[in-house]
Length: 475
Figure 1 (tube, rainbow, N blue to C red):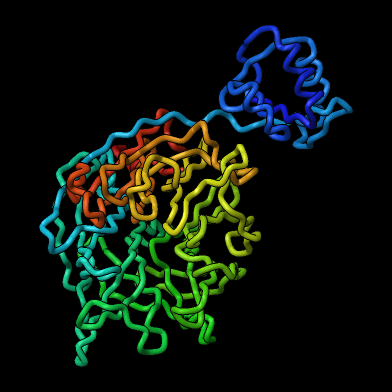
Figure 2 (cartoon, rainbow, N blue to C red):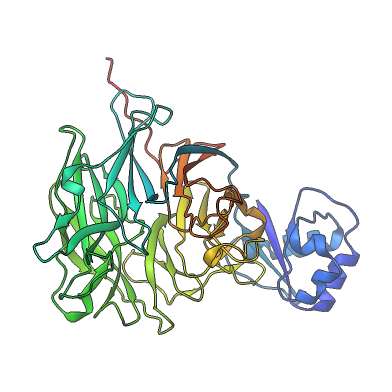
């Protein structure tokens, strides 16, 4: 257990600081109210400062009645005590290169993986969806698929199932699907791939030429038949607020009752600022059906709130949202009604500086994590500072990123890494998948190769949020 000491003023800080006579593994001190003290005691504010002294112990144990009940108070001392989360779960990262492609014609892009449990097999099978970026902004091929029989087996593909390919229209328009996230639906034993429908002109421009041109679509993979269904449109309410309704680059959830929570960014058209909501949907193994949606989150700043990703952790639901100026975060107790979004911050009060790109989640039974890009990482040469990829623990109480836990999980090599995926694979691993966007003139000179990476997050302790692999009954 750790106990956070929050100082109300300079005098209370000085009193405690002067009485710190020894270092033991008893306390983690975090000073938040007197920021000027950072310059005088860097270790205290940006690291761990362990103390055992009469004054400290008196403050702590004299306040446990408040802190132990979740309350905060200072008892006249000017010091607030509260119980903190346990330390971040340990993990290592093993970076694998799936493939490299840089022929000037296209790049592989938007890789996202999902695990399929296999009865009697030690690890799950893996499906990873991926598309060709056709060298025009947001111009994508049909959806390709790569597969692994087990997490360490060779990759097969990319292959393009005909059901997931472009649909050519008589007027020269191409209908495609982009920004896809796959996921396993255990109650039906099917894999769902959810993304957004896009209409392209012959030159690869996105069209908004018909009502509801931009909608959420899905396809279903049946492991028993090894077949994909054609793309189907998720039917949403008829009011104009859903004329534009995308699940795109978004993590979605399957609830214990089998219902889905599908984040959407919505609007009357593609020009107005987007809003975000969560649609609760029913899935019967073939058809995904809208049931209801929750609160609508709005921000009248630039393009609004879009590309939301959702995760559940310890009985609550957490939503991260893209905005052109900065990333935002919100929380809910039921997955539908969300609090007013607030900007992402570090736990020292500084802005996260992640902007105009997506963020995603990983959850371990011992901690909640955000994966993101940001400014301030010697990366001004990268478009929108979209590399490297960072991973850090989130304090679910404050909705802040814990700075000391930040790690680079995919390094920057002169290419952008902003379009990525994150998913739990089994109780031992979670994967972050990303391809290098070779969009800067010096990407190659800096070492980028158009690589598709899997950053395998190997947990030191089993992730109890993930069901163990199913075993054969030998009795």
